[in-house]
Image 1 (cartoon, rainbow over the protein chains, first blue to last red):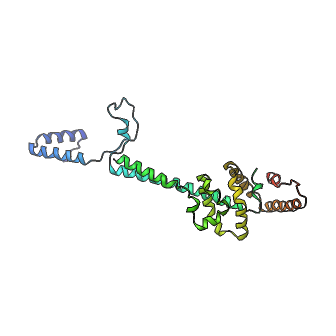
Image 2 (cartoon, helix red, strand yellow):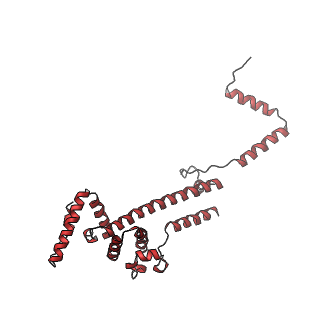
Image 3 (cartoon, each protein chain N blue to C red):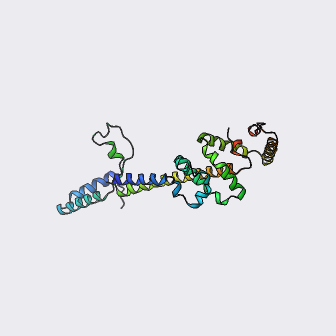
Length: 115
Length: 135
């Protein structure tokens, strides 16, 4: 016979079963939960929230990354931005230098292009 | 600690991004040859201009003998222009290059003729600039 149980009924059954567990088992479960929580990676919050929502925490705590991986990710992102900017600037400079050479070596003298 | 490492990293990135231009003595022989008309004023030129001239000098070895001569003849005058004048000249040159090649050649031909006439009639004050402005 298959009885259909709602999520609430399942939760009640689990709670009842938990109450029947002996103290040592419960203690082990609590320890395991604590260990799992310790290993859990804390995710940073990059959103600004109203001051009234978390009056005790400074905004810098909420926007500062909390793990080495996050610092590395931000470092790589910054490095990529710097590299992209550098590449763009170099490309611009190259275009200008090519233009300057063209002006300096054209059949027409530079006076023609200078007001 | 991590914050300071990131700050140092950023500063290093920025420092490498804006590499400083060299003094005349530190230039390579190829760079000195290309920029020889500027030997006197090189160390007094603004860093940005020096950096740009070094980029320009990279093209020098690939120029023909005639263009190398023009490059040297015009370089000093070019370096004495203000940044605004140089930028205006670049704009004008770009605009002139968008004119059909046939018409550009006509302008160049007309310029040569005017130069020849000018040589005959000293102090005639003929200029090609109005011709280019009309394009």
